[in-house]
Length: 293
Image (cartoon, rainbow, N blue to C red):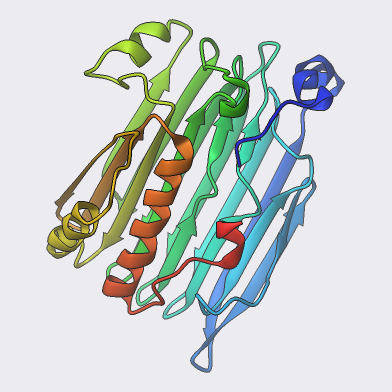
């Protein structure tokens, strides 16, 4: 997940003038005779999807960015739909790399719709922000009454193996959850060029190298706060301290992590997700084998 430099990565910004990449991926799952199947698929380069068999979930989709990363000016649109009573999970092949930009902003949009009775998990592999990258991402989730939806993200600031820090660039990460067509929750993380105070202030990121977010949107979300806090309290933080907290209101549960060691934060994140899905959704207390590679 945390890579070392290569020539192509360090020079990625120099080729941005060749034109932006427009990728699109549409996936729709449906319940067919009490089994989840694929109802619709559209994929446009560089986005591709595979459907490996994995015992941890009824239907697993793994999306792949064939370009190997994202540069300024790229635009990706991912649309995911989980039909009535369907059970599915979508994850990536690997952490997405956002390369440094010559000035253009990469725009990523994820739209998810979960129908009544659906169980859907949008499991992140994470996002690595190269120093100088410029990213605007919009996550929009439409969750119906009676549906259960898990989503999250892990963001790493800079290439840790290279001792790189995220000193300049742009990160704007927008999250919105809708219920019955009305907005239920919105969250905006915006970090501009004046980043040093943001990272160094204890009331902000406190010199964190990575952050994590997990959300559970469902009718019973508020009742699951004790479950979430119990799982978190049982986790060992190790020598590199990880800060975390959980809260819930109405039909949404939210957990956040802040850590110095991205690998350790990812480990905590995955352990929490696996345990939570087991207790709340009667799923296996494990994640797909691909996620643990």
